[in-house]
Image 1 (cartoon, rainbow, N blue to C red):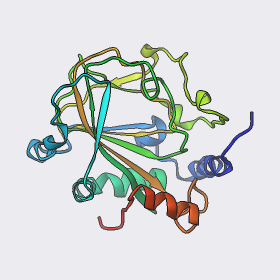
Image 2 (spheres, rainbow, N blue to C red):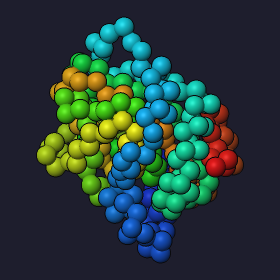
Image 3 (cartoon, rainbow, N blue to C red):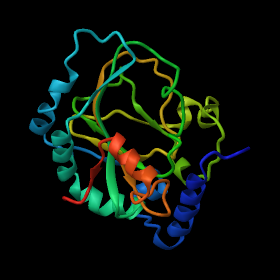
Length: 238
């Protein structure tokens, strides 16, 4: 199998060696790939983001709206304790928020694309789901295969990143309540088929570390182009 991105190979070897010396058994991002913080945000703060989930109907599997950079920075500041401890511990210290969206899952089912067990083809990075409203058991949960973040992976095409053989019962399921936050490594296997039709309203952030040993270096032309395209936020203000 030909591996298309040599930087991702380098990044995986780097983290494998780094974890030999800096593995923190008390940080669930290391040993599970998934970290849950219940009741992290107060209800009034979550209510300020309800404007992103105003739709005429919900006849879709998923829709998203771009979060404003101002709102993203507000959230990042409130996440500073976790970012400066668990996330820097797990990823490194040169962090950027490279994605920030408001995502709603509607009442249509889907078994395509991201609604299959998969990894994100980006190596080690942390995705954050912030629950703006209660996610009930009639809605699509967050699925995660515990410990799968620690596996070395190679892939040559999109289908190599999908794992249709993973059964739903093998994965941890999380239904977040308003103000809960889930942090997970997207190198681990996550998601599953969407058969439930209840609504789920979340803010999604993605945090990545940039260095010579990572997939992207913020000093390189490729890295700078990626940061500019994503309107990335350097996390140096918290």
